[in-house]
Length: 162
Image (cartoon, rainbow, N blue to C red):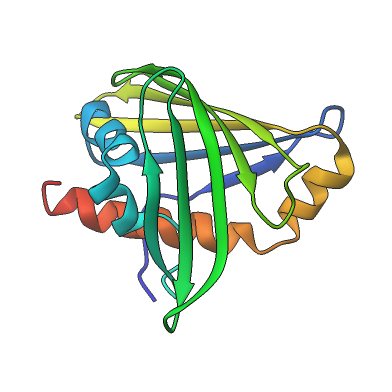
């Protein structure tokens, strides 16, 4: 298992059905942003280490749609889809995020890329869902493993200059 010097914070609000994920990276915002909109880069880091990712649709612009599937041992185990609502280079992405196995559980996610001293970035993701049941289901799904391992893989990718 890879260790990282940056911790991933995953917080659930007690009053509204949201999940906030905060993580710092040792790379400039344009590099972290690019890893979120370039499909070849995105497939290299998204999700846990135990899966591979296949992009099936990817159009990172306002009104564009996206979809990807996770495979394990050659078999599809999960797929996700959504649409891009806002893509502001190096600053912000707003998209919907849906797990195909629960199509009524649409999350509206806002990702912000904050420039920090020393060429670093703070990535903040705020996911808003319809109700606490959906939010709690996401939190109990093991998503924390996928988020943490994915960000470790992103650290590795960024360290290579991607």
